[in-house]
Image (cartoon, rainbow, N blue to C red; front, side, top):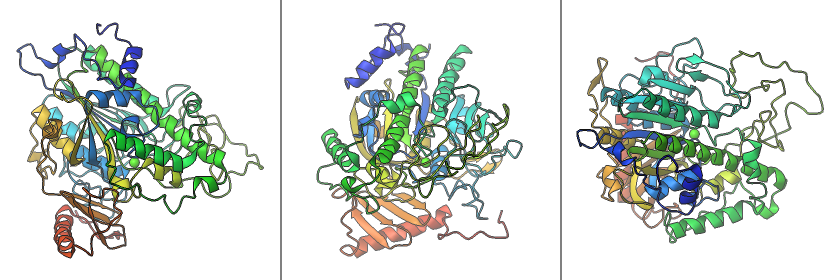
Length: 575
Ligand SMILES: [Ca+2]
């Protein structure tokens, strides 16, 4: 089978059979330079937004994700990889290899007047793109940036992707936004309006990412590239194309209790979780499915969510196909992860429907070149009011609601809590790593604990780049993470500890021990080897261990610039 006649259908067949992604003749040349030395890999970092631990197929989900499953089948899946529990801090940590407070994004995009809470990447960190550029990589980004407070079209752009190491950028500076008309949509340094009639942001991200690859190779030469593909799916609003939603019609009629039980069973069979870890009880904020009212509305919310993930997966397929077309697939290290756990925010889904459907309003369509400035548009581009409220059936552009807590609870099966919190449901993410030229274990699981900070260290390791002590005249904080390369070969990753803080929710993990607190509550201690679902608090039984881990946490918090929550804004801004 040659690269030319290896079709998308062949790939899907291979992936759906659970077979390893086929290594194609012709691609092998991609891993050898003309001098015979191994060539440095391309690196693609793909991320979902607000996606639960068990949503995709290769982590036990029922959502159809053949392309991600294919990457998992040809690579490794990490079962204990962690993010920071929220959008901005995750992106800051991921891009810089530091904890988010060290990079200046300790909370979100607000400036609280402290170094750790500027809402903007600072000049004491470097991005992966900045580091890899110094090693001769071309650098591309498609998708959501969300690490600067400066989002205005004509404002300060010093922390936009093009100024933080990326040669090309297509995406959004802000987070969330309509999938049909996202605010702050930007090409390079210019904000733009959607450029096609049937614009849908997930597709636009995928297609621009694929185009960056073809344009890169079209320019000739054999420079490696780094590309960051930051999807906004399946973050609210629940927006998806009808043809994608149709594939899930009725799929969730059995409700969230059955969905959780089915996922948990599959996860145990796959080895993602252990049978000795009990599934957490259904969230007290969610009714038993058989007592839920308005079931058709609830079903629709999850159908749209699944369709959003499905569309993301289709886009991953198009990016992979493009890598195969250019002969790059074999020697590209592809990572896929999520920025935080499933999201229980009931955005737009409570209260009366607004605007009131019984009182028609006449709204002006938006101008052809009028930039979208609202995260939640008041009006679609063609002039229809955008509706929120209890019972609004999501999917199309004139709606703006979340999928809600009960489904988020199921998305995070079998873990506790959600986005915002640092219990396992908030911070656990899939991490798929695929690199046929280097990762020989196909379809295997890796149980080593890892964190976003490790991605920078891994990129530096595999590219041979030098992580700088100084950059553009500024002293740079040493990177915090460890390379994941030993784990590719199932060797341990040596480290002292992993730390978390978001909105006063705090945690530290050392080996099997995790000390965690839900703000403003006290410390809980868990043995994650025996109890990864955090149901058996051992704090009273092991006070010495609590004291030891608490001291470590406090020392880290001081070093990383963490402030007590809630952080009070200072009038006088410290420089
Ligand atoms: Ca997020």
